[in-house]
Length: 284
Ligand code: BGC
Image 1 (cartoon, protein in one colour):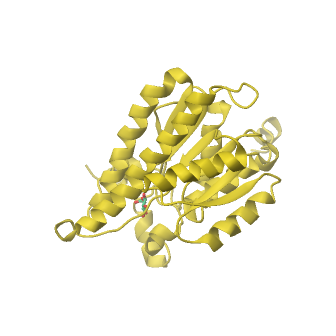
Image 2: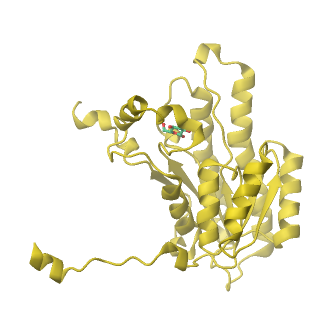
Image 3: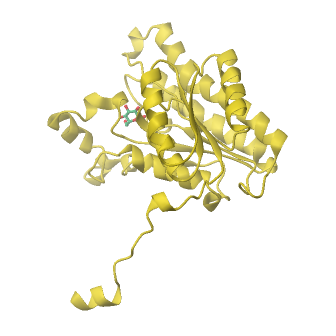
């Protein structure tokens, strides 16, 4: 054992904060005032990106995220817009161009859950979830693609003309009783992402999804905030820990960077093995 240590010294990983692999790029993160959106916005800033922090209801939270971001020496701005409203999305992109000139990276993150047993699901709950989670991603992607196509590749910035990362979920493939609206929206995001990716690849625009599993955020607080619920959740997570927003943020930085330049049309699952059907470890 001693000998092995001598032959294989510990690898010293460079600190992510010192690698500015997205220097000079401009990102828009929707729903960036909390949770996964906030986590991604901060990791993008650490990697050298200027970041527009979209929010819809909580300006104080969004301004707090802006304050955290500018500490990394990049620019940040909070922009209010309901992503399910076409006029607000168009205005948000105009504001982004006014502030930053262009967009290089769109993180299509804004999303919500409105759970209900299926036979009691009100049309309002269905519409709200589909409008924000799916139509919102369509509207933002459409605006970003317009700019990517118009501007094209700027070699000094990135070898791609633009990158979109859809934040989907393990529930784009795992059915979810009691959450049919949410799972339907995420299944929709998968084909939204792949179809856009196919259409725009010839323009050197990359479009991918990140599919988080259980990440410690407000959206699923009841699934982790007591020892009982946490232990129950762990039955679904072979890796034995909940995900943190940094797990998603770091992957988003890499996926948006030129290190991932040949990746398009793919869903990357970041879920501690949730999609490995853990029940089959001892059954089947
Ligand atoms: C949901 C969370 C859930 C996780 C795993 C996410 O997409 O928003 O509430 O904990 O999937 O089931």
